Length: 295
Ligand code: GLN
Picture 1: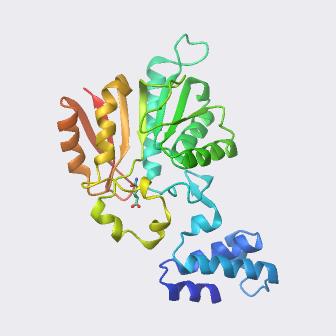
Picture 2: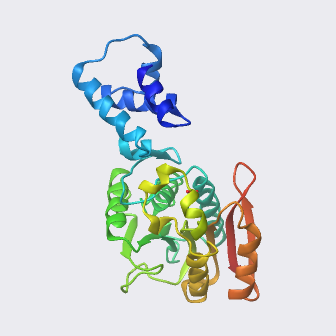
Picture 3: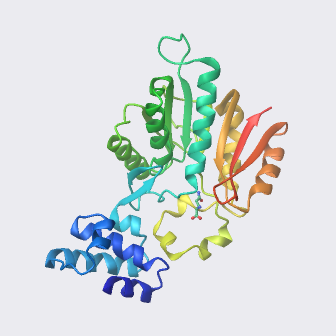
């Protein structure tokens, strides 16, 4: 296929997949249709759209930004340069946060008719809103939507707009509150701290590793990636806020880099003496999520 060759020449490691996805979008069909009709002619308009998309991809732009779409946790998210593209490894963060939420709901019984207030959950640094929206959709499936209040927080007003659009797209805009803020909400809110569960995929790339990231990553906001000298600067700031941000018995689930399993334990020991920090692996067996809780 012409497009695959063009992308392979530009250095894409997933040239064929990229080309199939972009061609499918240009024609308005799924990838399977492309695979089923390899020799089918393509109209002039679709061909022009496809060529323009190929040029953007050849210049390094991520396929997800060109398509305006990324699948995460079985849901289609709108994505663009306002926020980081959701990564597959972050699905582990959602799974663990969901398990913590369900465990707490089962332990106390919450929501309408129980006399208990809803559980409070904060997604800190929500970006595209993928984590908060996936949680809200999963809770709805489990008929637990009413038992949990979720707030999605971000420093970037543009990212927060995108997150809101994704909440609307998945019909959970009434289940997720949105708040501007540097880690915690700027303004007093109905869903303000303290929280039962804090979930966060904050920037954790070391300064000196920023330049080595794949070229596609340079199209994403550095604010969502750059974690300072040791990569844990922003996470460390959040840790410092946890004593006021978490209820007693609350828990924070924090995404970390695969090489930060040991350093996060050391940082928690220094910033939050006496608290516990356990590191959970992702599907590939690499350290990915730190669970932090007062002991
Ligand atoms: N896993 C991401 C990457 O390697 C980093 C995401 C983050 O810093 N939160 O690009």
